[in-house]
Length: 414
Image 1 (cartoon, rainbow, N blue to C red):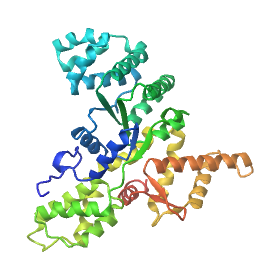
Image 2: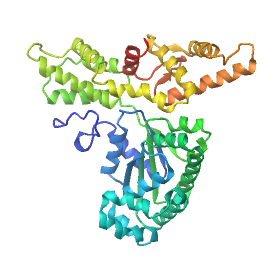
Image 3: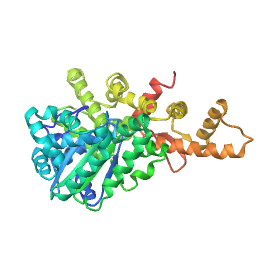
Image 4: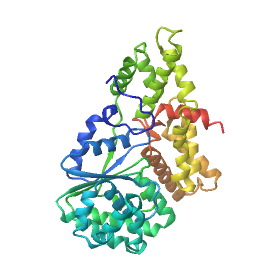
């Protein structure tokens, strides 16, 4: 444990993996019978968990992991899948080629030019834009006939869907229905799918009336790390580096961060260690005052700014244009509050916004019903996208205290 390194921003692997360890086995148990959608915001350890599944495969699965964030078409998706299968499991590719003429004709060409040009040869070997449905169906049928078990892990799937919907909604709908058909094929019992994203896929598809295309998935949310888990990590990292600290800082760290996210726990702990290295000649231990100073200068300063900026920017990227301004306004109101805002008060703010835009009239009963429905849909989306939560007293607030403080500092005054 003392040899564990700080991994701030990169994928945490091997002995450095600390959080969600018990969940790895749980995921494998779920995958025995289910295809899974795994949702969590960025910086919570989702990709590190996936790499743990790759490093520790169970039930004889071959794992094929690929990121589709930059893709925007069905043909690109299946080309990328085949290319990754070749890169990660070339021996399986050879086995598959013996039963599928499409690959058999391709193997010699790929071996001549190497893995870097495999994707190019795949494109040249067929008209994927026209025939992607037929080719992908053939591929899955051939995989189903083999004894090997495959787990396809697709990272940032909602990002790809969002791009597809913007580019060609008809093709996106065709892809989603086709992908569902592939998953539900009773002969494909040796194939499992784990798709993940840091944008809520349900919100993206609900806007396009395509939510039914993913109703066969089991939806999982990456569990929050517990305070004790965060405390154990902080203590192990600081003790291994002989940092003297008052135990009271653990509660202060928790209070400042709110719900602990692995990336920010790592970053905060690293900044505490760096502060100790600079100042240990002047102080006997790190106390709560130093921790607050480090938090304000580092996590609310430039050190974490680019990572936190994602939470502001992604509304413009993934929310319909008509929802962007009101989503920002709701979040601004919450950021300025001391301890959250009642649902009733937020709804009044929402109605005032819509009235100012000319979208709401108090005299129109049908309009009132529509306003309530649209408000509920917006708040559900903000909840699902990990911005907000509502407690049992119907009080809304930011889900994470760090993001609330950062938002208030950087955006509510604009």
